[in-house]
Length: 290
Image (cartoon, rainbow, N blue to C red; front, top):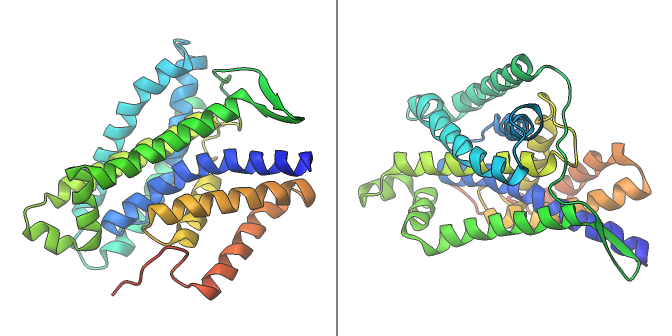
C-alpha cells in the first residue's frame, strides 16, 4: 500500500508541472486557434536561460534567475506573436501556415540553443534539498516545492481569466473573435498577451524541471508531445480540461513506468487518448466548433 501511495504521489507532483506546460499550449489555442509547434523549444529555452544564470554564467540563486527570466520569456512571446504569427493571420490557409511557421521556428530555436550552449545536456541544482517522510512515504522537498509552485501558477492564471476584465476579454475572443472586435476589444493585444503567458508558462516548466531532468537543445519535443496529448484529451482550448487530463496522464505514467517500464509510458498515454476520443471525440471538456 505504501508503494502504491508513493507512485500516486509521484504522478500527482509530476502532473502539476505537465499541467503548466499544457495549459500554456491550450491557452493559445483557445484564444487564437493556433497550435504552436515551437512550444517545446521554448520549454528548452527557459531551462537553458536558468542554467546559464545559475551555473554557466554569473552564478546567481535560482529564485533570482527565475525572476529575471520571466520578463524575457514574456517579451519573447510578444515578439513571436507580432513578428511571426500576426502577419499570417487573415491570409488564406493561415492556420496551416502558422503550423508550418511555428514548426520552423522550433528548429531555429533548437539550432540557436546548440550554437550558443553546445549540443550537450545541462542540469541545475535544486533550490531546496532533502526529503519528507510521512508513514513510510518519502517525497523530496524539491518535488513538493514544484508541485506547489505549479498549482499556484495555474490557479493564478485561472483567477486572471475568470476575475479580471482582461481575462474576460481573452474568454470573449476565444468564443467569438469577430464579435469581440465589434464591441471594442483589442483582439491583437489579447493575442499578444496570451502568447506571452503561454511562453512564460512553458519556460517556467522548463526551469522547474531542469533540476529533475537534463536540459537539452532537442529536449523540447517530449514536453510538447505530452502537452499536445493532454490538450487533446482534455479538449482543445479548455484550460480546465488540460488541468484534469495532465493529472490523469501523469498518474497513469507513474504506474506504467514502475510496473512495466519507462518505454511504455508514451504508448500508454496514446492508448488512453484513443480510448477517450472514441467515447468523446471532443475530449473530456471540449466543445463542438462550427
